[in-house]
Every structure is written in C-alpha cells, then in structure tokens.
Image (cartoon, one colour):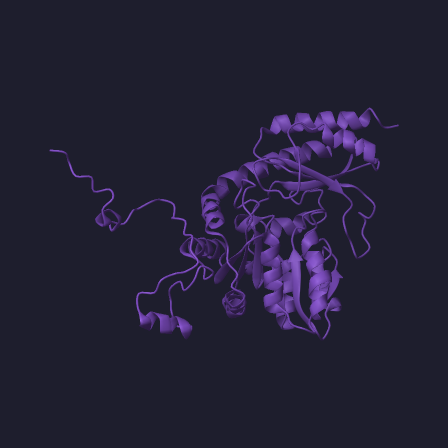
Length: 387
C-alpha cells in the first residue's frame, strides 16, 4: 500500500516551521481575528499589525535589532538613507523653524533642506564641519534642531558631538547625527548626547550594494514624535530589504574589521606617495581631528579621501580613474566592491578644499595588496603626464 502524501493537506501547514532567518511577509490586507480586534485597530489600541504599511513582522524584527544595537529606544526603517533623513527632519520640524547643518553634510541632505524644507517655511543655515561648543553662535530664537554628520563623507571632518549636544540640550534643541560612516559598532551618538541617530543601511549594514534602506533611531524622549510621523504618513520598508539587512547585521562585525584594516593600510601607503598632498582619514595621526576621533570612536570604516599636490586636469583624472582595474566608478559605499569618485566638495562656508578635487575611496573586500598595486599604477599614469 502506498503511503499517503500529507504534504498538501491543511494539517501540513499548521505545524510551525523554525528557521534561523525570519520569513518574508508580503501583504497589503492583514486579517483580524475578530470584530473586537477591528474596533481596537480603529481606536488605535490594537497591538498587532493592522495593514501592509503597518510594519510587517520582518521589518519589526529588523527595527528591534537596530534599536538594540544602537542603544536607542525605538527604530523606524525607511526605504532609503535619504528617506530616513528627510523623514526625521519632517518629523521634528514645522513651519517657521530654523535648523543648522554641518557644512560637510551628505549632498542629498543639503538639497532636501535648502530646496524642499525651505518651501514649507523651514530655514537652514550651515555651521563649520568641525563645529563644537561654538555652535552656540549660530543658534537663533527659531532654531529647532542641529543635524550633524561625523565624519562627513567627502572631506571627513569630525564634529564634537558631545559639545554640540550639551549646547543643544541646554537650549532645548534636538541633535540628529548621521552615523553611517562609523556604524553602531564604532560610534554611539546616544552616549555623546544625541537624540536621533540616522543610518543609510544600504551601506555597511546591508553590505552588498543591493539594498536601499535607511533607519532613524530615537531616544525615549523623542520616540513618540518619530513614531507618530511614521504611522501618520504610512511609511514602510520592503520586507525583502529588511530581510537582507538582518542578514547583513550577522556579518557586520567581521566585514567592518576587514574594511578598517585594509583602508588604513591603503591610507598609510597613499600618505607616503610623492603626488599625494593629504590623506583624509580620521584614524591617521595626521588628521586634524584625530584626537577627537580617538575620544569618540572605537574604530574606523573603509571610506576616506585624498588630494593631490597639483590640481589634476579632467584628462589626467580620466587617465587615473578609467585605468583602475579593481575600483568601480559609482556612488555609495560600504559594500564588498571597492569604489572611487572624484569631484569638488559643495560648501556654503569658506573652506580650504574649495576648488580642489577630492578623490574618495570606498575600500571593499578585495585583497589589499592588489588595491594598492592598482592605485600605484594609477598614480604612475598621473606622474607620466605631469610636468
């Protein structure tokens, strides 16, 4: 007698399946168990998931993991890094407010504040990328929050977050820190007094350049504001990307350590090259805020920049960049593939980097020696076309 195949029977799906990684949920409609639960949802008293935009289980697990890793009270996931930034800014500002941005801020953050927030009556001013206690002189009666990015992802200046946060707290202001460069492993903005921490999950945390995701994590004092904005706008993050980000969290420590070691080796090598003027890496003793980095950070990541002694022409930069074998030419950073970009930094305040080409490297997971050889060949191409 043939054994009955129970794989298609209803009972086969009643037994829970235990997996290491969480399942991916895809849904718009979520069913309630009863009319009573429906009425609780209508009253905002239901503790479960009410709809597909109400943070499906994979998203909630990822958010809880990020909140625990960061030491924050609550995390909300957004569909990209800039979505997390813009969402946090919208949540904590209103018409008539004034905000301060560090001048080495991520370009899309600058554009969102100066082009979009301005339309809704929120004014933006910039503070030096090395700002500390001197932030006080930029504060106005209408100032609502201060947004920092330490280090900035182009010229890598560091702000004194502790000093800024102390001034902000005394004046009743909110401090938001984009902590993507260091990740929660190498810097804790909350320990320095910040109120909100931002991450572009697309970078180190996801790790494979195939995820668009961001997070905003708040302290208990500011959690209700973030949660209310998020729920009201029905913001949500795709389950697939939250799943991949959870996977990335499992290997973050190992990957970040490789990025750190390899990038430091390459940065030290570059600092010894005759064509290189300055290597912008906070973990190097030559960095102007190295002492601050030692105080506030426990490690460094794989992103840094350098400048050349002689400003290169467009043709020279083409020869240098286009001939590289192991560096992709592309935006973003933090993945397994090494990347390069080059250009002039955008600044509102006077800067020593005005009109200077900043060559930015994201050091990936390739062999360090091969990356150094590749850059060495690139510098040789420059050297043969100078003078």
